[in-house]
Image (tube, one colour):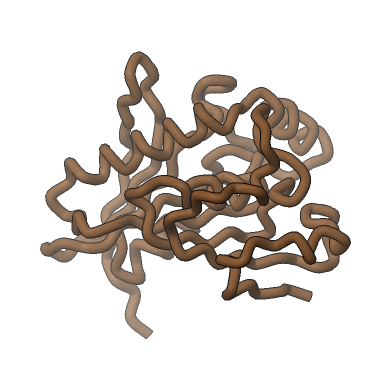
Length: 205
């Protein structure tokens, strides 16, 4: 089995006065590649998210994972202990949908400056709270496809701003949610409220 060579680096994404730390991985081969934005869980851009970013790059994409807690806790990354979960949730509660979307748009704008990136549209993938953010990112015109893995809270709220994310009428991208049926992240009694453009829902058991 081949193991394609990739290049990885830490970069900074400008967003006005905010400088967003990000992890970038891309094929070592020359050429232009489609790009994917990887959205962290509540645990920051930790070793798991960096590994996901690298795996996507090995599939032939430019992948970037911005730190969506840059405003709340620059440099934050942690493991999966009960204390880590508590802290990660506290930072999550301090985010707002408008700021998160602004940061994703800044990541798109940054990717557009890279000669290795195709300009025809961008993908977005997120996990848990990041899956919720990836769903919101589907409202951005530059995002053409999203994959939301067990997007926590989509059915019940949106980060600090009404209406609930699931009520978003302006999704512009093809959104594929992967919902875990045996987790409180997406209550089963909310499944009937899935938007019509979630035609490719995958249920994980």
